[in-house]
Image (cartoon, rainbow, N blue to C red):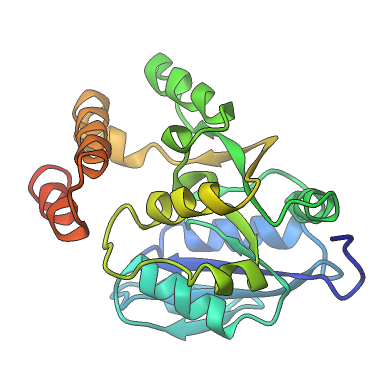
Length: 235
């Protein structure tokens, strides 16, 4: 589907107590994208108790209150979005320069959905190796930290994120997209925070993320996945 001047991107950022980093992301977006391609930035807040909302309001954003839960927050953002393309971005992930033009070019080449490759803000050799795998176009190598673009029409057709998932919502949705679309992994990289790995230890975090993937593969439902996450990885 060739893009036209009317094809613009709505950036959707779900947040919860991200006052320490949301300003940096919004400033980066302002400096590395164009008003000709970005329809709006929607910051969907899940009940922050810090300065997240006030900082986001300093930028040209739409700040919307939502019930807690990233799937619910992103679905609300998609519902409110005016752009024909949706771009879901985590608050601790920095997209590549000119990401807006890269996404529009991919869309003009017939890709309705896709993501970027990933790198961590860490020199840890394990994390660098793990990030290297993000170039592989397979569901096992996908996650929300890589960000996600998708046409709004396709998002609505696929019924968006499953709000039963309080974690793993990105992976579950992307798995569905792989079954019905030609998902593209763009060669440019996002820079994502390794903060959870620093806080919990990279071996522990990766082991438990691997267990969550395995449990999902073996048929565990969203409640069991979240229970496991709360026990082993919740801060």
